[in-house]
Image 1 (cartoon, rainbow, N blue to C red):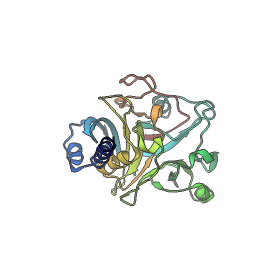
Image 2 (image 1 turned 135 degrees about the vertical axis):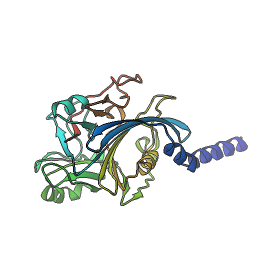
Image 3 (image 1 turned 90 degrees about the horizontal axis):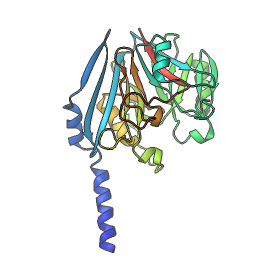
Image 4 (image 1 turned 30 degrees about the vertical axis):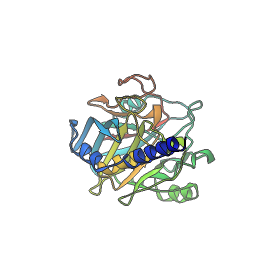
Amino acid sequence: MTKTVLGALLLLCSLDAAAQTPRDSIAFATAEWHTTDLGDGAQCRYAQIDLFGSRQSISVATYPGRKFTTEIIHLDRRADATSNLGKAAGADIAANGSYFNVKTFEPVTFVLLDKKIVGRTTPEETFRTNGVIAFKDRKGRRMEIFRCDTTDYPDVARRYRSALAAGPVLIEKGKTVEYTSGSSFYARRHPRTLIGKRADGTVVMAVIDGRFKGQGEGTTIAETAYIARQLGLVEALNLDGGGSSTLWTAREGVLNHPYDNRRFDHEGERGVPNCIVVRR
């Protein structure tokens, strides 16, 4: 019995140690991406890549932050598909936003729109909501991503025009942020959405599909941060995931495979109360 337990522990340790290896970096770097030019320096791409001993389905949209308007869209006590919100806003790109109450559609994280606070982070969300996307200008061409807790929100409301809290922070000042939490949110593989910036100001939105065995298995928070680094991000924030994870472009439609219909297609979007839209 002792040998069996020891062997199982060694196996688990070896799997954990092998979760992020040079082989994964090579697989990511040599992946066959299906890429679409969206114009004016923006593009989207999709690939299935074998990473962390699993099949990962990754959708990415990139654009030069100073040439496009980035805006937080928020609905009052209602929800709609990210694609519909993007279309209604005349957007080129849209990704789902932050955490919310799935029954009332009220945000459970801090939301600032045009200097007005329309959402506050609840005590239950502080275990993962430790960062914010913020904009000082009306057109949202100078996006900032930084670590932020509930005590910082009054200062954010004073200094910025709009902001959306989410988390956890994945990349901070070019370094991966490590977490020791053993909660299923951190340690298990789920669909994930992230947003971040490269050193040159390029903004990157990405969705990692999840819960589709052998097609898109999802990532832990540590694996999500690893993918963010592979995408060249120096700042990155995790957004709402699970059934909410959606990345859409006006040219290609829904890029990823939203989980809410439990089918590996592009039809399973969940209604969300807020999202991030990008337009020329």
